Length: 136
Image (tube, rainbow, N blue to C red):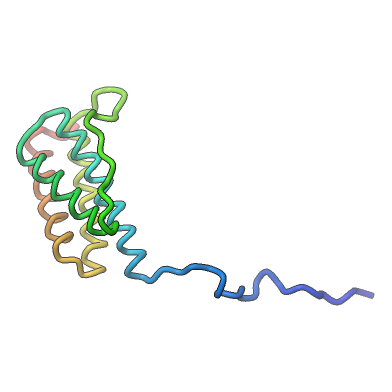
């Protein structure tokens, strides 16, 4: 009554030899580099709004960590704030604080001490700046 199925089911395990796979460490490196690059972008926006030596130093340290995680490829950076309208600096500090927190979680899970220390320092700095500027 029914013709037998002659092809493999889509639910069976495919031949893995043809697909590139990354290790957990490589995936965490990619994720950490992404979080740090996003934090760098927000830091650059803050630098454009209110330049200061602390943000300059933080941006350089973030760029070095991203380059290290990406095998020496330095992140693309913008010299001008990318926002269409002038963003509120407290909101930028809150966003940077959240990004630094995400980076800290990933850095801790991959046992990257340098990135974890940098992320924790940036969390503290942005929390202090948010209190000084005042939340919206």
